[in-house]
Image 1: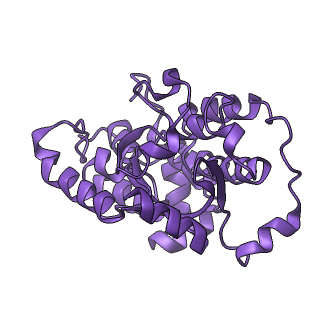
Image 2: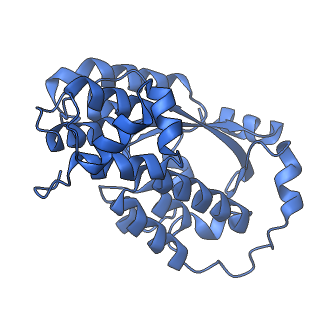
Amino acid sequence: MSDLVQPVGSLLRDWRRRRRLSQLDLASEAEISQRHLSFLESGRSAPSRDMVLRLAEQLAVPLRERNTLLLAAGFAPLYQARKLDDPGLEAALRVIELILKGHEPHPALAIDRHWTLVRSNGAVAPLLAGIDPALLEPPVNVLRLSLHPNGLAPRVLNFRQWRSHIIARLSEQIDASGDPVLVALLEELRSYPVPAGSRPYRPSDQAQFGGIAVPLELETGDGTLSFLSTTTVFGTALDISLSELAIETFFPADQATATAMGRMR
C-alpha cells in the first residue's frame, strides 16, 4: 500500500467509475441516497467504517484495496495480508495441494494475483521440457512462460488464438483492478513476437467449443495435446493472500490427450 493515500471519496469515485456505475446505480444498490453518495465522493461527508465496507462490497473491491479504503477513511485495516509461508496458512495450502494432486494426471496449478506460480501438480513439469531454464527460475510467471519465445510459445500450435485469449483475460483483470503490475505485464506480453509459421487466427476458431472455451494446443513428444482450462477462486477467504489465489485446472479436450496424459501418470 502506498504511503500517499488518496482521499476516500476520490477512491470510491474511482472504483465506481471502474465498475461503470452511475452515482444513482451505486446508491440504489447500497440502499443510500444519491445525495449522500455524492457528498461522500466529494469529501463533504465522511463515511463510517460500515459505510466504507458496504460500498466496497457493492463495488466488488478486492480485499487488499478494501484495506486501502479503510485507511483513507481513517480506520484500521480489516483484512490480514499474511505471506503464504505463514504457519497460519498451512491448512489452507494443504487443501490447495490436495486439489492439485487430485486433478492428476491432468495439469493444474495455483497462481497469485500477478500470475506468479505458487504450486503445481506432477502433470505440469513434463509439459515444460525444453523451456529456457531462466524462465523457470522463481518467481515463475505463467503468462510469460506461455507466450515468451523461449517458453511454450514455439510449441503452442494455436498461438495467435491462445495469445488473444490471454490478452483479453488479462485486460479484463486490469479493467477490474487497475493493478499497475498487471499493466506492465500486459505491455510485456504484447511485445513478444509471433513464432514463425504460426497459423492465422480466424474468428471461426472460437466456435470450436461453442464459443465458451479456448483450447491450448500444445506440441509435445507425445504428439499434439489439447486442453481446456477452468479457474477456481476462493470467494469467501478473509485473508488477502488466500483471496488472491486462483487454481487453473486443465482438462483434456479430446480422447488422444486424455490417453497421452494417462500414460504420463
